[in-house]
Structures are given as C-alpha cells and as structure tokens.
View (cartoon, rainbow, N blue to C red):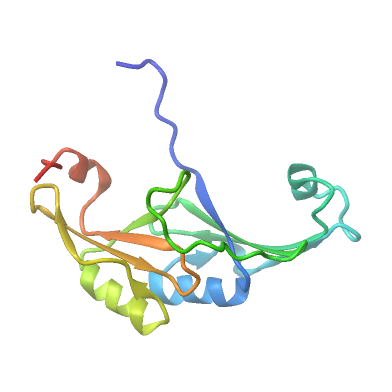
Length: 166
C-alpha cells in the first residue's frame, strides 16, 4: 500500500464560448452555484499582473472566469477565452481519445436528471446502463456544448467496491 496520501480533487475546468449561458445552465440543471455570484472579466491591459497571464503566457489578453461549486464542494471553473478567441473542439465525443473525457455527478434518479438535461438543450450519450453488477444506474449525457457528464446513482467508492465485470 502506498504511503502517499490521496489528494482530493480540488476542481475541474471547462473552456466555453458563452460563460453566461453555461453558468446559467449548470445552475439551473445541475444545481451548481456561482461562488460570490460573479463572473470575472480579466483584461491584460487593465490587470497585467493577474496570475492567469503568467500561467497561460503572452498570447492571452482577455478572459472571463467563473468559479462554481458543486454539491460536495468540488470546484467547477468555467473559462471563456476572448483574446485569443475560443476555438470549439473539432471532434465530437471520443471516449478513446487521450485525456479527460467526462465528469460525473451523483443523483438519486439519473433518468430524471438526464431528462432535465435533454429538456434544457443537452442530449443523451448512449443508453442507460446498470453497472457494478446491476447495483447502480449510470446515464451519460452531453451538455448543450458537447461536454460529457456521467450521472450515477451511487457514490464512487460504493461503485468501485461492487462487481464491475457484470
């Protein structure tokens, strides 16, 4: 067993083309809340020493940023890059492409939340599945911007201790 402590996930981030629409959608559909009830608009010409400009380099001149909180306190950062402009991913969802490919929320009724996603401009991704030997319900959806969200009716640790192969 490793002696390295398990670090908690602090936040995930998403790059979008319309921060106002995305934050509204995630508030209304997923129940996430904007922390401080504000969206930051950061411009290099006004705040040249802002940390974001040292992180993303000389090409970045303007960005909008919102900090959202999920139901268990994990952060959900929303970025709208303005200069340079947002570039949509030319490839739709590909589960076998390297890198992160979905986030997961826990909800006692995945089907009802999936229907709410669809009613609010999203879509289902594949079919409803019984996972962990049939002990858990799993539904994948896409938000209106193509980001994939898994909806699971049990906690991650409970699912991981169930029989995955069935």
